Image (tube, rainbow, N blue to C red; front, side, top):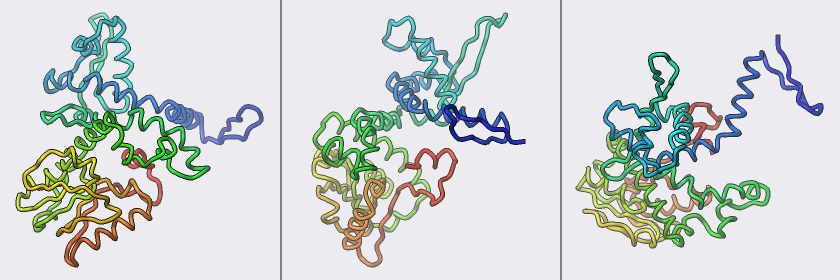
Length: 322
């Protein structure tokens, strides 16, 4: 039999099938209310090198918060207790694994943390690549300060970032040297991780002679492609202030310009994580420029997230829902 919960002050009734469903709904609501803490804790763990410390302890290692803190430059007597609160939150989201051990009489309980399939993406590899750089960008003050303008952007129109800084995000990056470095590190790490998988499974680069990477940043993605397919001549195309800091790669030419004005010619055009940043009108303009830059038998390769028409509740989709 259905039960009901009457809200305070004579509000509407919320119908639930049973008490368990009612409690689960409330718990989920509270998780959403407190959810802003999760990415901050993830960023903090990365900045404290938690994932690297566990990884360096050896394969399958499990460490207590005290053992992890012992490798940090701190004299704070409460550091281990404070860190443990963060680590158990990460473990509840499967970012870390957690096991509990106790002494012989069971009076002293200790949590031990290890790497999970997820946390391995936050371990810094030999090339300095880690998705931790991406969370550092997303949680940087530059982006965080734009969220309070989300309401205004809906009611009054415009873009939250533009309202906050008076310019588009990609323009701003060219004016802030510190954030430019944060952004570049994030893109470098993300591209390296994503392209490794793409190059293992996608064979569409094999017959390309000249490939243009539109919005290619520092050329990391194109370098990965041309390293596997050295017969390809790569053109890394991005804004002038971006490519001027790009390192030299064999077989890759850096070209500065505006993709909404024109795009360099090639046998194929590659765009990774570009279209989702722009309005439909901007995307149409960009795609028309791409069409002009290729022959009839050429192609445009797009790597991006595609949202379903009906919102889904699986883990990956719900977190990319915006």
